[in-house]
Image 1 (tube, rainbow, N blue to C red):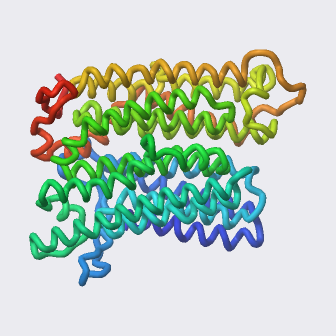
Image 2 (image 1 turned 45 degrees about the vertical axis):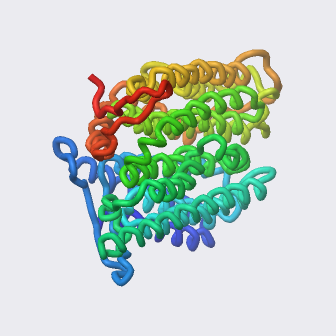
Image 3 (image 1 turned 60 degrees about the horizontal axis):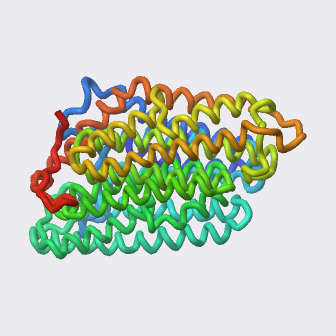
Length: 509
């Protein structure tokens, strides 16, 4: 019952926080924080029970219960190394989102924490569902609470940003629903068994044209959520107008559901088609890396700048996934986690600055290190993480991704490496414009409070551990990622950019 308990705790905690806020806002915050810490303890217990690493083909925890058996719908939940790491990230960043909202959210506190916990319940369901109907249910569950989070507690043009987020996500999600239903009927007619169970559907045989159409439905949802250029237009507006906790959840977790969908569903369900799509996907990744970095450098709004860095970093994710090598997928997993930590920290920094100087325009900042040295040191750590400084988690992620992709395509990998240079430029610009140079304001500003120091210190510790001791993460995710590469068709040749056959290998010697 551990897996359904993870979801039930968040749903019940959301309702309870909403109710107790009528009497005391502090109780609502404590309730939300306790719910997330309880879930974090549960997933850490699952992780600690893992003895000697996950065996190939095994699941660390499973739960199955018939829901609507007539239509082949069940509550089928399971956790392997891939989803386990994402759950740990979810509850860690979720707890931090409550802490950073402690003083920022002053109206409708209970309803805010209700929406926050329900977003995280939907994300949890996405990461553990092995029934496709249930997966879609949780995919949509994330949508409405995030729409309300941006629309009610956001800044400036928040209604426009929330509508844009809703339309992009809902439209692409409906295309995925059509693909799920089509897969359900195709499998039923070919096997005589109508089921939404992922483990059964993964063996469905279909014509190549049908496979392309169904994969396109899944890709629509996952590439929008990732996001991939040119489907990224909702992201900068949503990040800019969302409250700090909303930006943290968007960057650290919601974007990762798109990457998870590619790894868990697109590649295993449509292996041959995914292999044919790989060159185009890697090109999209390169475009995202370079285009996102260029736009990040041109921004003056700090949150919008950090939002475009997410577009660039997520380009490495799709680039590595479709390289189809074990090393590249390990790099993708590290990138998912390290990006959630480093970019989430930069959004927290943007919120702290806005709270103190009431602007996000970096042109109006400067010389803040002398006034807020602790904040400046924290910003330096995560700016260096964003550009891939050795010793921090992002370096491991980008190195593994590029090294693993080199054998798939040397030319594309060389172009992707230019993103590291671009990241150095925009990351150093953040530090120079905000914390160095002449002072732009004579205001006396308070450095980080004890609560903010706890949040920042925890993020610094995690990004350093990921950079210095990544093996535990790699060992945990490894067997799950290897299963993704086990499909026979991924060993078949596809054409590289020169028209010569290459084979996507599972291992790099």
